[in-house]
Length: 115
Image 1 (cartoon, rainbow, N blue to C red):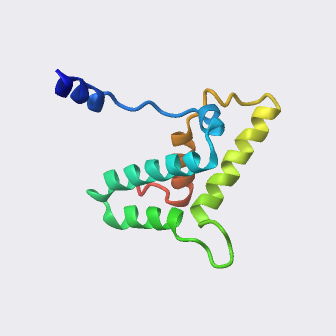
Image 2: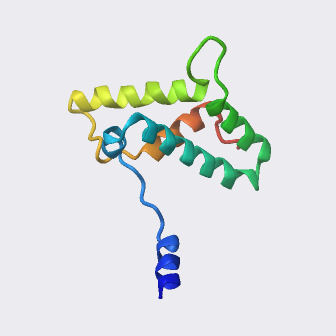
């Protein structure tokens, strides 16, 4: 019975995290959440396009010389800040915007899909 319960929990997909939930987490957990999503996204992509997966991972992981963040994390921080400003102005609802969608948006800006 324990095996069955564990198996069911593994099969239940994790729900996306709203920016409101993300903002309520401590900084260490926020960093881990972003890192985990990028890791999952690039792992899934690696089977079809290993070069793109490596480029995305490096864009988020490799710090820029003289700066505390990588280019990808810096860009994500800017986008999240912009959404927070919109929320303060009443033009966005952080409970309805998913962190994962912002990360995908940032990645698509840097690495547009090839047609």
